Picture 1 (cartoon, helix red, strand yellow):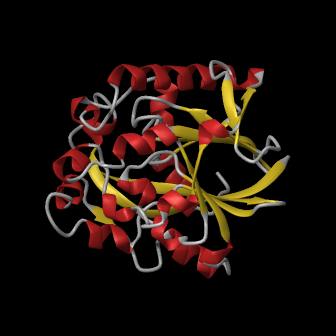
Picture 2: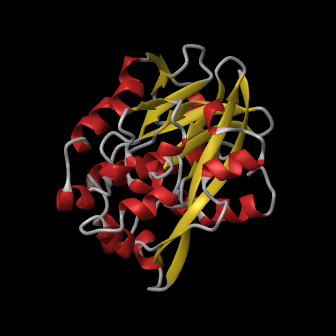
Length: 281
């Protein structure tokens, strides 16, 4: 099944290039919060991650959560939240039926409260790991509890309860996916390392073909092409360094085996430039 999709940038943060790519200089770079909207013929509009919204600033006003935005200063222009951009296109928050979360870091759930009617799909273990963390323990894991809606548990559905499927040869070293809607249209693929039980999604875009949104399994397409991870500072934000390196290596192998596959990391400046240029990427 081919699906219509579109990528968005919902704010960006500032960080050191040397932190995100080993060997790069210590200069400040801008890193977009890339998210996506997918239109399903039965389930309507589906969002993958949410980027930042104004809620991020209100929920990180006080310590210790304020340390999060001090470490990676965030910029969000008026009208740049995902909900605002969708509204500009005539899509209201109530029309978003599902939000798929790759993981629970604040730059991926920052706009979650903007979609109060959506069913939320994410990994059960990833949520259980962070759910009760507060204060400095939460900050160390990139988690801001106030960004999670009060009715989250009622709307939450776990990925591992979905049908497990074998991925095709085109996905190289990635063998198993989880069929999120029971029709093979969107498959969740586990990408361990950066965050506990992080997932990406695989689907077939109506114009650009097979598409793999790989979240933070890599900082950039360049990292995938060159199989180069972050610098020492960047690894401080990684849940499991060995697993993260293994996942990046598999993405590198996937790219070599299937160079035509559209792979989209969530903070890739190359993708951001293509979005700004009006390309479908």
